[in-house]
Length: 575
Image 1 (cartoon, rainbow, N blue to C red):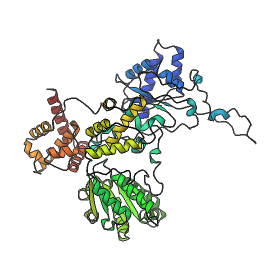
Image 2 (image 1 turned 135 degrees about the horizontal axis):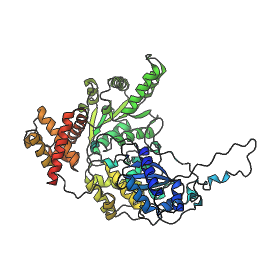
Image 3 (image 1 turned 30 degrees about the horizontal axis):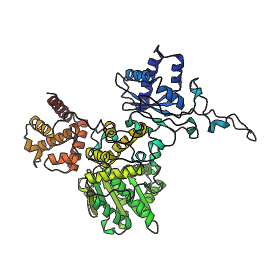
Image 4 (image 1 turned 120 degrees about the horizontal axis):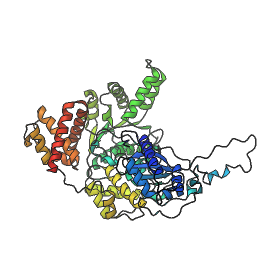
């Protein structure tokens, strides 16, 4: 049954229900073998992976040895003929609550061993659980099972929530497969040494929800409850290169307090290049090195908006009510205000008005203000000129995509943080293939390390190519010049019109569609696409892709243009 339109949990329940029905009808399975299925519960589906909770290590071992092939076949049928791989998570059943004693605790209550023994399982086979100490010999990629006793001292965690995917498939230069990989979870304790619960994953794209050690909601463990700063993001962990050296130098001056003339500091650049890291680094440095300790606050534009809405809701029409008072104290009684993703305040006039007054209050009090955006201040959409002029009265610095040497240095740092030895040829391979931003570098390295750990193999170039084969495609790719020529012909323009400086409305639309299709149908980076289109900046390409993506959802005409051109270009590839 095709359940792709459901949420991950509902989709998992639907597929598993059909799978279970198929397995129960399988006459080749004995009653004992089918009994192991009683202790399996579906959790979520991510891509081609279904996360299944099992009660103990022995159930896991049986499912991945004796029942491995029937399970894979049934999952494929239940998923409409498409391969579906299982990822197992050991989730011991919760012990039955015991009534509280009336007076003194009983010296030997029956429930006492729960902390160190496996709780009885519902199914007969699962009740025979024993600690497993040998790696599983199965075609499904799994880690070495951990003794069952290692899992009983930790309560079963809540189901991790899969971050919502954006509607835009180009996602501002981030490879979508790595979009959901949490940077904190990515390089915490290694997979091989992580604490329970233990997981057996076969598809690394499911990592955001089944990543060891960090469960649901733990990505914010390192955020200080008062400052909201991530303690891991410091100037020491920020890898410096030609693309970001000036931005780092200025940020450090602001953090030290010597950069008073740089107020406000505006940092802009593409997604995943280190803007957020620098904001946290400024805050952490100020908190740790300045006396008296300054009051620092880091927030995203979304958090600022939500706080403002909540203050209005609790205050009603009374501007002097505690709700607004709390809001003013939070944002105006600080020494350093760090605002991330400021561009998302565009189109919210009420919130922008409040931010304008907050900005003025802090600026007049000589407090430090640092904002980050994916575009320079002058390109912020739906911002009033009075606010943009205030941003530009300080200092504006940009961060560009890292060059090859910087990407290799970043990968070295990430590997060291993960306490994993990665050969130089592997780092070179990843750095050469992933060029747009740091997040995709981090995601690629994490995927390689995870596969090596799960298969108990060393990290090699060959393993890297297998782990990242989805991205190292050898298929013939359409040329960007073919896309430009096809779009120009479609709109009755010339090739030079689209790559030249002309900006009539019809040329601009065709050029933006050509940029969108180039980003969508090739593996070129934003920077390289900009070079193809007459040496334009990567932010221009990013804006064009976002504009066309939005227009497709609002205007049928634009949607038809893109669909027709896409069909023509795919036909051109096949011819």
